Length: 288
Image (cartoon, rainbow, N blue to C red; front, side, top):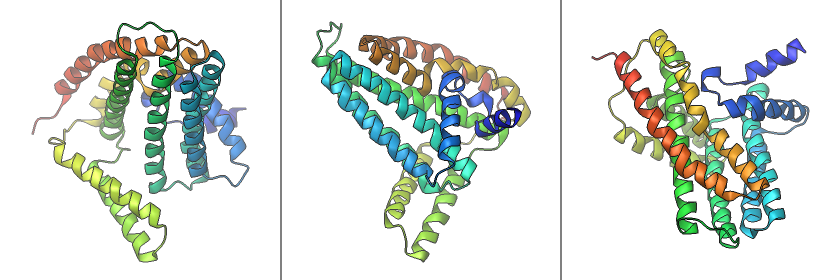
């Protein structure tokens, strides 16, 4: 049992960047699923594609707008998020993760997001649900809000990994790594789809680099101490919490719970947390 617990801890990201919903629910279940999948010749990319399949099925079920279809949508989205937690752990344990796999994982998140919010918009229009704003406006605001929350939380967690632990790639590191991978695939004349994906991703990274400001510098220990507890404040608005609220609201046939949480409460949380985070980081920043 102790060995299993040690393996579970080693499969996690550093604790300060793990969401509470993931730690309590999705990661433990994902770890158990990973231990089962580890026994079979299943790749992390196959797990990721399975997550895309269940994500699309969730969107289809939401679009039907019935209590039964919403119940299945909640189940499918629970499986989707569980698989999303599992593919990375499987890659780390099998030591067969690839740079292309990271791109595929991110791409699948976008596909699932589009399917789910389209399905939600169609489904809610079929329900006798009274909202203070038009249904499609509510769905669009929820989609934009959830994407913004995920990007912002990932940004601050990524900064913690970079500045406190030194385990996160800078944009320059990312460009160098994927450029090397692309050159290798071209020399081998293999995996044309992977080459296309990497080329697109490199273009995206270079655009990001143009708009990113001057790199900030911090003392690693000081950054760690200042942010290790502060990052917990982001858990109520991270992707795993959005997923949990969507699952519960779908099973209860109450999509308004998810819409109110995402549009109102999560955005209010961002307005409260972000200024505190920025003020603390500005205080400890090393000015050149």
